[in-house]
Every structure is written in structure tokens, then in C-alpha cells.
Image (tube, rainbow, N blue to C red; front, side):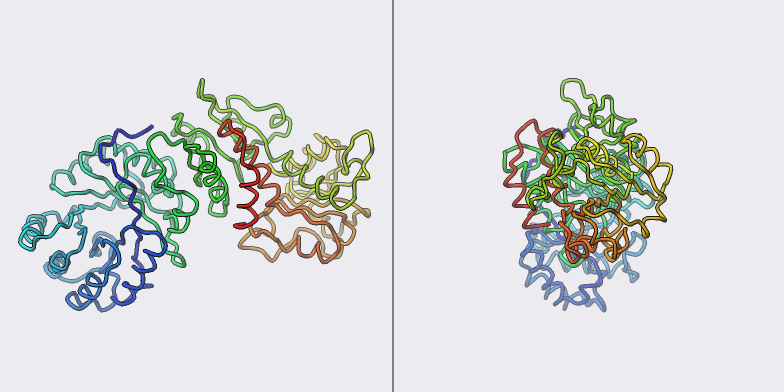
Length: 524
């Protein structure tokens, strides 16, 4: 998809100051200064959110002390806002905002009959402000035809800019938002709220959106990227119609650190790409909705690494043997989806290198791996667990596998000539001295960071403990293993190595490995 939008401009980042965190005009001014410091170009202010709002007093304080251009909104309750007073007084507040040089005034489509009055007021006060006509759609995103009718109605009001907001119940609905930019004759702000709507903000510059909304530090808003991430990770000022889209397909997806790593790395090698989180509920719907070559590749996370094989046109032999895919590229010459697994070598080489570094290269000489002949205790037989199991098997390790689904554990054990044991036995399992423990479950992941998958007393028998969890960087399991004297390998090392493999597949270029490692060390 790419945009034929004629409204060419540098992307403007708008900070949404819409919550009860700012209950007075003075606090709003402080919020505006914070927004400027965090990189916003404009702020959207909700007058209806101000406690005991007094239009003359509060608007003068706000607009006479604004450090940035201001978009004034006074959202009535019938449009999802908080204002319940007289409609004439609501209009008077907007007129006063015009007199005090507000840069943008938001008027709801249902109240568009007041536009001539506002336009005349602007003319009389020699205002250079712009009028935005907005519409918020309740419920799920309507069909494309309905959205197009709303756009036409808003354009017919004569507004300078129009704004359409929906609630995304599924990420596939966002395509309807992107398609609107092709038909719009005036600048359009269009996006979906909610966690599944995040890409409607992040990809807005690609398709021609007028604003991108961001949230202030300490005040997250579902579906909005933080101002900090827009500046540090996404660099949306570089996104254009030719930008290739990559993303993490997962559920949930908010934990992903991929954007922090991939986006700066794209810029480091001058590759025109963007990497975004994609909250996906239905793989079949997702892939059928976004078949465009613009959507060029995907990382695959929990819980889809096994299921996604069914949607790949081709699967690399290693990924096929493992039965799990963590990377997909859309092959440019024919658009086919090709699945790979970069987890396997990433995890195993991270473990091997740590053993070698600590002088534990005592594996069988014929295999040349410090894992050869060692007992490898694997917790978790899902996608990441399968990658670890096949990697350990390829190095000559002996495997014991635990999983909450015993049948899944048995199936994987059979595939790698290992042994499966019931998950309930894990707390009593006593490994032999020098064994390897690898956690490939979400146990210990943020926000439930106080859990570990094994009995604490057994950790002293392991020579090395690996945890695939990388949020937090140092899990409780790793800290307890450290205290017990084991070598520890954090999930960020696996994450880095698999990301390097993904980067090479995504771009066809050589990954800037040292640059990527510096990011991981400083930001993870």
C-alpha cells in the first residue's frame, strides 16, 4: 500500500494531555513544557478534563503561556467527553480560544453547524488558527464504505483538517483507516485507539497522516506510543511512502523490545524500514489483510511460533525440523512468506560461548561443543523450547524436558531422543552435577517477576542456567542461580543474537552487530 496523499509535510507529533493528571490550568502549562521537552511539536488540550474549568481565567493562563502550538478540545459527553453543560457556553469557550490565538480548534461533526460562527470569529480577530472537524466512532471499526461516508461528510463542512477516530477490536481493522488517506482532499488525522490500534499511529506518516499522537512519560495511554519512543526508537520523521514495514506478531506485544533495537539499526545502515509491535488475535485474518509487499517481514512471538508454520508458503529446513518459526520474510520476487528460525543458533551459541568463557569446554572432542554429553534440563516445550531442544541435541547434549502440557513434552522429547517428565515433578527433580538448565517459559517475565520455574535448592547443581525471559534483563531465576554459583546467561543475549539473524533476513544487509550490542547493553 503506499500513499498518493498530496499533503506533504514533516510529521507533526501531538502530545495528548487528556487525563485527570492535569486538573488545573497551571498543571496543564507544566504538562505542555514536559511535552516540549519530550519532543512534541503540538499539544492537544481537553478543556472538559479541567476540574472546575473557568474559561476566561484558565484559557488565558494556558494560551498566554503556551510553549508549543495548541489544539483546543472541549469534548461533550455525547461524544465520549466529560462536558455536560450548556452547548452555547461550550461554543463560547471555543470562541474565546480563537480570540486568545489557539492554533487549532476541534469541533465535533455533530456540532458542525457552529462552524460558520467560529470561522467569522476567526476572521474578526485576524486569527490564523485552523478548524478540525472530528468524529469518534463507537464500537468496532465500521466497513470501509461507512468510514468513507464519514470522511465525505466532514470534508463537506469546509473544515481545514478532519479527524476520524475508531476503536480497534482487531489489528486487521486498521487497514480501513490506512485506505482513507487515498480519498481525502484535505489533511486527515485518522487512527484507532486501544492496544490493537498502535500501528495506526506508528504507520500514519507512511500513508499520509497529518498528526501522530504520543503520550507523556508517566502517563501511558493504550494505543499511543510514548513521546520518548517516537523520538528514540521509531524516528517517524524518516518514515515515508516507500518505508518497508516489519513487526512483531504476538499476543500480548507490549513487552517487546524489538523496536528499540531494530529501528535504530535500520537507520545505522541507511535502510528505509520501520519495526512495530503488532497485537494479532487471528493469524489467518492478519496475513490475508496485509498481503502488500510493503509489509515485508515479521518476528513471531508468544503464542504463535508453532501455529504460524501453517501460514508460511515455504519453511526453512531447520525451522521445519524444529517445528517453530520466529522470523518471516515476504520474498520480494514473488510475495511468498518464507519462515525461518533464528532462535536455535542464537540460544545455543550464547550458552556455548558462556561455557567456553568460563573454561568449561570439556565436551566430547569429536563434537567440539561444551554441551556434548552434558545433561540439558529444558523447561518449556513451546516455540522457544523447541529451538533450544534441537540446538542442544545437535551439540550432543542429553535432554530432559518438562512442560505443563505433558503430551507436548513427550512429543518434543521423542523428536530429540530425550526424556520427558511431568511438570509437577520439576520441583523435586535433582539434576546431576554440571547440568545445564534452560527456562523457555514466561515464568518470571514482567510483571510476575517473583517466580522461578525450579526449586531454589537445586540450582547449586547446575553448571549453567539460561533464561529466555528478557524482561526484566536479570530475572529472579538468574539472580538465584548467580547466588548458587552457576554461570548465568540472560535472555537478552539470545534476543540480540536472534535479532541479528532477523536483521540480515529482513534487509539482505549485514547487521551492525557492535551497534546492536551497544543498544542492548545500554537500554535493556
